[in-house]
Length: 259
Ligand SMILES: Nc1ncnc2c1ncn2[C@@H]1O[C@H](COP(=O)(O)OP(=O)(O)O)[C@@H](O)[C@H]1O
Ligand SMILES: [Mg+2]
Image 1: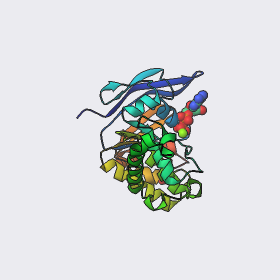
Image 2 (image 1 turned 120 degrees about the vertical axis):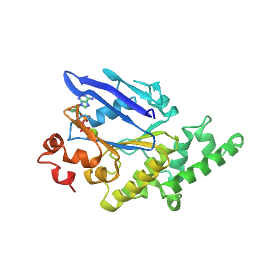
Image 3 (image 1 turned 135 degrees about the vertical axis):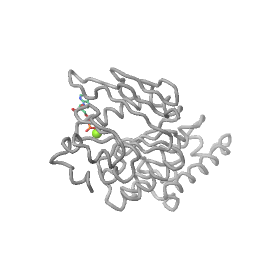
């Protein structure tokens, strides 16, 4: 099987600092691959290169057989790559449903505003967008919160809404940057279950996450970065036994690695 995403020899330098150096890995459809590593290891920088925010200094990114290195995020989205950001990008004053519709509209031609205000020419499209958005909310367990103002949601629910928005783009590959950041244990488990469910539907997940227990629980494959370089990769059990990985985390999260 050819990989959905292939990252080859990726590198970038910031003013002499090698933030990421010669990193490569492959992601298969339906796979959950996590990138872990201590603070400053280069995880977010790697994500920003893959999702078209930074132009890599070296290497290439191949999505579904097409070279997409340094392609703009909106063009990547059209090719099936969708991402969330570490900081929430939700419209606080809109309802949950309106937020989901906003995500859905990124895939459609036509005007979001026209549809929200139901101008005659766009009523049919608005109906389709609303139905699509409701389906998305059901998928992330937020259908009963559809009419709630997003600003009133718990943090865990906001995170799920953000993922619903990313799913509106019907991605083949979903990049999640710290989806459980700031969430309590219960919320984290809900997000866990949701990510696993999305993966089961065939979407590949590329995850950067600080919560090591979550990473060990849901990942099929783990890539470990330290000082911008890949120091290990493999399944959770193999990676957590790797002496280089334990050394990189020494004094910080070694206990969590074995939790
Ligand atoms: N835009 C930037 N300009 C200069 N240095 C950066 C920039 N982004 C990241 N870095 C540096 O690159 C290294 C990797 O950072 P980052 O990718 O944010 O690590 P992580 O996400 O693993 O904590 C760090 O030393 C960081 O200070
Ligand atoms: Mg980071």
